[in-house]
Every structure is written in structure tokens, then in C-alpha cells.
Length: 114
Length: 112
Image (cartoon, rainbow over all chains, first blue to last red; front, top):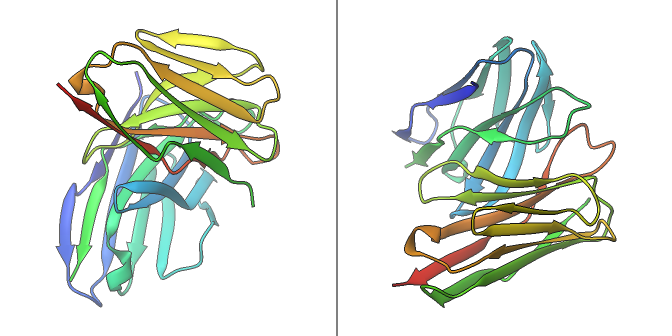
């Protein structure tokens, strides 16, 4: 069966510090991978998605970036965090393009920027 | 861009009551999905719908894909305290590259 994990689960970072959130998927190959942000317990905002290694599409311009160095690994990064980057970040995967887009989410990473 | 209107935003109900929530869209979707999110966790898929008119159940949950393909509803029968959480609808349209559009959620509170 497929599993998805992301870490760290919680982190507190000062403004201006870098960020790296990691997500891995097991039990499937060539998944679509996604990063969402959720603010204030509501509303899922799609940040990035990837249909393959090295292929990243950005939905919202911001100071965050994403990378996919391996088929089942997706990383969310920032060089300098802003206060507004605080939120609950969710990684998700789905089967490839052309297949009904059921999304499966990770456990989430809560980021607080102080 | 495409948007989903999900209602109600929140519900406070008594244990044992039935619950109904819905989502509407201005455009046609090929897939409707319903998720539940517990506090501090990622959303979990409850029901997936792929055909207009389709009615699907998962335990006490029932969801329908509207005939017009622009709406969907989720019913929960005989609610229990563990039904508490935020319920999201999500839709996928042709040409969206598989990306889902999410509603803003319905926050359900259940009084024992």
C-alpha cells in the first residue's frame, strides 16, 4: 500500500531564516506531488505541483520554492522566511495525469515564523 | 479562476442528528471528492464521485454528484462526536492537469 510522510511535523523559525520541508511517498511510482498551505484551519491553497523529477509548476508567486530531486521526494524550501509564511503545510500525491485526481495527504507540517 | 462555494461554513449540531453540506461551482467538474480533516492532521479522503448522478455511501456518509455536474452534497446520518472536524469538497475539471479545486470547508461541531 502507498504511504506518504512529511517532516518535520512542527517547527518554529525566526524571520529571515531558511526553510526545508521534506515529503516522501512509498509504494507507488511516478506520482504527481503537491505542496499546499492552509492558514487558520481553513482553505487549502495549492503552492506547487510536480508531474515528474525536476518538473515543478508554481501556482502562487512567493518566496517559497520546491524541488523534486527523486521520483518520490518533494521538498519545499525558502531562503528567507517571512512572518506571512506561517501556516500548516501539506504534501500530497496522486496517480499520474489522466487518472482521476484523488489526492492523498501527508500528516502536515506546522510552521510558525516569529 | 474556478471557485467552489461550500456551505454552510460551520455547523453546531446535537449528537444523533443528520448533517447535510454542499458545494456548487460555476463550471462543470468531472470528479467530486469529499475530505475530512481532523485538527492538526492532513485531510483524509471520504468519498470520490466520478459520474453525474452518482450516489455513493461510506458507512454513515452519503455523497452525490449532481446531475448538472456543477454541484455535490455530503450527508452524515446519526452524527457522533468523532464526526467533528472540517469537511472539504474538491472538484476536478477536464484540462486542469489533475489539480483539484477545494472548497473552503465546513466546520462541524457535535454536542454529545
